[in-house]
Length: 467
Image (cartoon, rainbow, N blue to C red; front, side, top):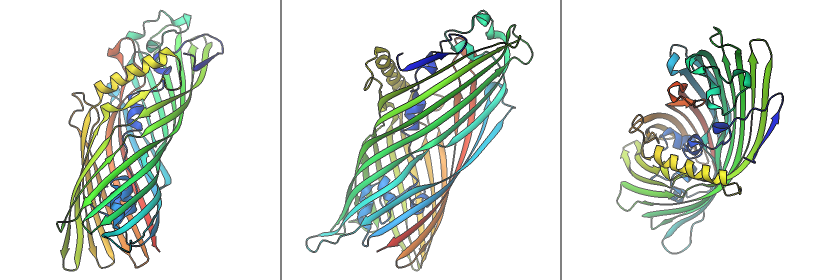
């Protein structure tokens, strides 16, 4: 592999396999599983807004919803995100550790400019420019415990002094800290129009941006002296990924049969170009106190395509005297197995091209199509708003252990409306459970599977100004 530069400190130690290629199924899902935060109003109804309009948060769901503005508007949404993760080794499940982190950011800032055609049946012709965060990649977890086997079983070469050690039967203490931070955001340019108060249509051009940093610290110790010579192994890995891409969205909302609304939208793949800088360092400590170490670094550029997305929506407006509002349901379809890496886009190396083909085959095998459901409602009483939402998000994995599994999201929101100003606040919560494997040994029976359970709470504050 020409893209990795090895710097030997005291020993030539080749680390191949997982460490040579940064691209995995995890990367495919990291950049494909998007959960747009948008505005507090849209978040308060659980992101179920595909047949509604009049909120800039509709930009990442159905651009036709932008036709529902009759005055120009500017809005921005600060966000507080709290992430809490419990982790443990499956073979040592009594030893659970917790990691928490809180992040402050901006999930939305946008403006819509309204024009009213003076003739014909077009009621509005609106242009929009906006920024939205569509994925939060912040997460940290730590696990520790004692299991059979060693990281060295996954490496093609190890120090000569321990080459013949039978790791397979030794119980070693392991500790692994993984710290991830980053986001996927999107700059959008859109147009939407209302025709005859019966049909809204909209289109948009999106420029998504990726920024992701990961640091991993792994320690392995022979605390009970189960192995001769070997005492301790330390490993550090880092990954910095950044990139940009392009996508397109189009949709409609039909309002000709009151009080019903029917909407649909299609989202093209995100066509990314991503650059990664990565490195690792390894150090062995022996019983006699001597050490052997290696450090390596490299960079790689490639292309990646996310799945198409189709969204269908149905909503109803209701008027119960002083209480008004809406209820909406969104159904979303994606086929994650259609995700695709092009590792040969900027590399002439045959090994990169071959690995990319193998990775795409693995994606087709391990990932599948999903159907996600989101439900939301808004109640309006004079100037005040109350919102509730929930979602069922299906696991993208197609294997028997995960097929049909759903994770749940819950959302709540409040709002205040004035003539030229409004303020919304929302809280959303979701949880999911994932497996994590630090390395794959030659004897796969000793693969150290860790379990992570992550709960994420998001508070959003949206301020809007009409002009």
